Image (cartoon, rainbow, N blue to C red; front, side, top):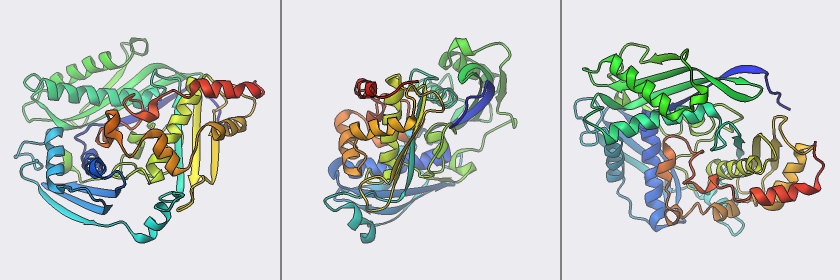
Length: 395
């Protein structure tokens, strides 16, 4: 069982929608959205590569939808803001290569039968804690908010923030005391910019953003700021660093807090438990914390390819659980939540996101967790969990 340190500093990072890996995630998920829109039974495993004025779309896709791969890629790149033909990557100039084939029949036979099996083997984790109102770790939540707010300003006030380009990264270090966030120790922001930008302008806007998106109770005058610490960041995006789908798995999840099974999310349809079971694990962990049964909770599930029932379910509350044994939470989980792939997909309506006002493209930047637009962020099972726990021994 994990212990809570009396005092320690923890750090998480985030990246913006213009980061080269996130460009690829967004293209892959936009293709997934296009496939599911007219064919909810689409099987999609889409991988994207981005480099200097080139996008390569590859993978295994079986769908009845009519998909204009090139248009989707160019639309995503335009929306992000890569529209300047002089910086080495732009929606207008980049070449788009498409190398797509159908899903392997060896995989399909285990996934498409009546008792839908898992699309692959592996283990998935979900996590929640009381750090923030979103029940997310504070370090990753505030790192997301910084780059998200900078992107909002770049999009909504382009004349005022004309010097900001799409690629950026953030990092937040927080001092924890007895398991609770106490104060921000340092903030790092590296932001792509135009040649004429003055570093003092970027420094000023970063400090404004930090004051806006991080609670005042965590802020103080001695925070260490590192803003474009290399001096300049003019060459960025896919021109500065080749991007690939699925390389920001810690940014996508909990910022290094808790465990990670290693599977990426973007570009995968919900038959892939890498994605759907990770979403369900977050849903379960968040509801356990919302029910007051733990202050921190990690849920692990594991699968074998083609097999519907999970091989294992494990719960770790890091010593914060209200029940005497975390194993009792596993029993409660199994009594309330179905962890078979087909039932996960049905419960979270993962094949038809558009009906509920969200899409997979929205998950592909600023984290898959912590935003209430997604169905796995609901806490509608908290009361049922709390009631089910009344029959167990408490601490």
